[in-house]
Length: 432
Image 1 (tube, rainbow, N blue to C red):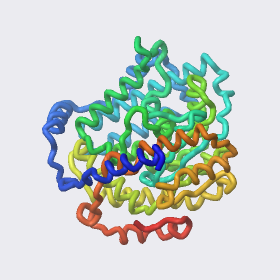
Image 2 (image 1 turned 30 degrees about the vertical axis):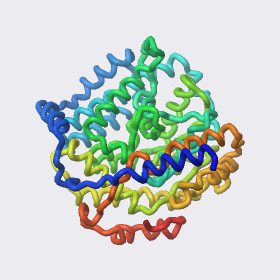
Image 3 (image 1 turned 60 degrees about the horizontal axis):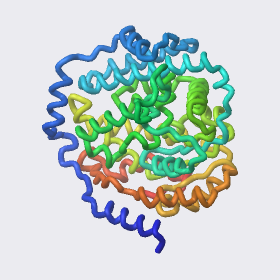
């Protein structure tokens, strides 16, 4: 047995030995002392979403004033804020984090507009032959994109950079060479781990982890991200009616700016949102090589609603498991229906379908085929990097969640699965 295989076995055994994470209080949470203290502090004052005030804060942070409102950005911003205000169940803690997020997005948009004015050649930069991972959460997308990102020839988006993609004018690394954007994200991650440590087992967004580019799309107020933070069916409907070809073109502009700031030009991207935006994705990145990941929708839904219910103990005044089940079953149905409808838009010679049950332990042959279709050489050096990543990141590294659909949400896996026959008919997906 080689060193890499031995390391893989040791780490996997540690993961297997970790206790399953079960929730006895998922829908009737028992808060920790830390969680109660956080809520007592944050609930004392109502958070205000005054647009003029938020714009003033973003302007002061960016040192710039031009939002580039040539395509109705302010209208989308107002719709975004109205959807948040319509959710009456949010705690002030959540309202505060969403307000901070909006100010951050505005600051980054202002900084991007200013950067493009100073360096107009940015928009001439080619985004060359990206690898794009398309699939639902919990279908292997995070594992796959982080694995491909181990290839140093590509450019991926770490979480810290997704939160603040464009540095504010005049802001640079500290005396130790550490980017202040990284420092801020690390501090926020540490605070999250202190208040909700189970998050790591669900989806650990540590600063260096590769993140989804939908955060960049939201500089244009054009992604589905808000649906993961609040109950915003109005925003879902508004988002679904947007001309995403325009907004994916804006995403490309952000990627060009990031390439200008820190190359290279070959991007490694991923997002579940792409499932329902394949026309815009293919129009924007016609030379992309796409890896579609597929998994039993029950695994996706039970993971999503369990994570949402757990998070809602701090985010909301109450937990509504029926609402979570209904909304996210419908949302996953919409995403997968669009993927089935539009899959053929991506040429077979530039794409690959990967079933979850074939992914773990079979990564290297799949990567070889992906690279072959992308016409990219898989060198011995890159292969060794992939093997080291696999050895260090076995499935279940942070522990595993024990899902109990019937107990917590009143539905069986078979009842849930029956809605997705169209997906099982189209792709190689096994019931779990």
